[in-house]
Length: 256
Ligand SMILES: [Zn+2]
Ligand SMILES: [Zn+2]
Image (cartoon, rainbow, N blue to C red; front, side, top):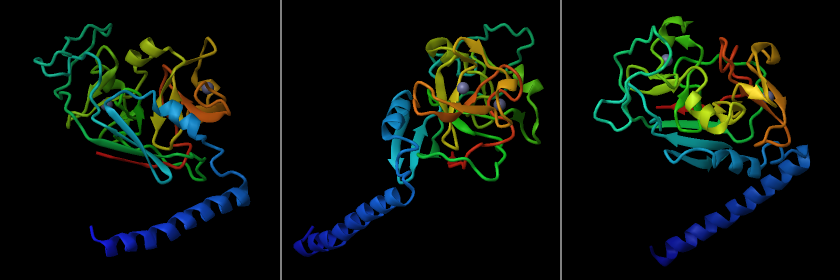
C-alpha cells in the first residue's frame, strides 16, 4: 500500500461514515422505530443458541446463517461408516428408509434482522423454509414435486423425524424431537426465512394446537428470547406442523 492510496481510502471512508451516522439519526427521528423492534440484545441471545456448525453474522439489514446442515444426532441416513450411523429404532412399524443419504451442504439463510409483517403473504416453497438451532433446515408440510401431502414421506422419517432429499440435504418437516428433548417442548427451535422465530409444541405447560394459531401457524406475545413480544410460529403435531398458508413476514433468502 502506498501513501496516496491510503489518503484516498480516508478521503472516501470519512464521508461514508458521516453519511451512515446521519442516516441512522434521521431514521430514529422520523419513525421513532430505529432499532427498537428487534433489539441487538435479543438478536444476540437467539443467535448464540445455534450450534457450532452454523456461522452467524450481520450483513446490512440481514442476519446471515451459514450451515453445513449436518445433524448432530444419529440416523439410519448416515453412511454406515459414520460414527453417527444408527439403524432405525423408532416406533413407526411402517418405517421405510428412502434411497438418499446425508451429505454436507453449504446453505446460506439470510433473514431480516428486523422482521416485519408482509402485506401479501408469500407461500412457502418446496425445499428449505428456515433453519433450526442445530443447523438443519426446516421444510414445509408438502412433498415434492407437486405439493402432495406428506403422508407417504412420513414413513421415511428417522427416529428423530428427519430425512434427506435426493441431494442429501437432511431436513425436518415436523417437530425435531432431538431438539425438544434436549431443550424442552416450549423451547426456541430456530427461525423461518422471514426472521420470525419457531417454538416447540408447548407453552406454559399447555400443548399448542392449530386452533391456538393463525393461518400462518403463529401468534404474538413475549417469549424468553424476545421479552418485548414478537410474532412466532409454533410446531404442532397436526398438519401443517410448522407453517400454514405462507410466511407471515417479508422473507429473506435461502440458497444452497
Ligand atoms: Zn422431506
Ligand atoms: Zn406462542
